[in-house]
Length: 94
Image (cartoon, rainbow, N blue to C red; front, side):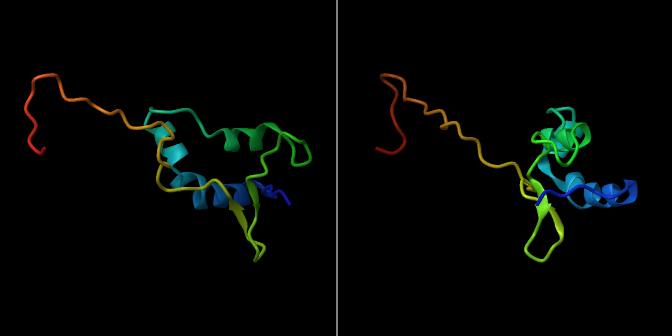
């Protein structure tokens, strides 16, 4: 079941509990990223709209949560760049 704050005070609590501590908002406020799309969709769509984010839901105990919350940015899906030793260069460990 999707969660939507009942009023502004509850919304501020949820934002403080989840959004303010999430890496997505931290990047945005540091000027290094875009605003969280999940948060933007909660403000744009009603709870019954298919576009309203399913990430805002309830845990098994009935408490509202954001399932995409993370304090740290997940690792990149890109493969790390591999540097090849230039031809003729000696290696430290062979």
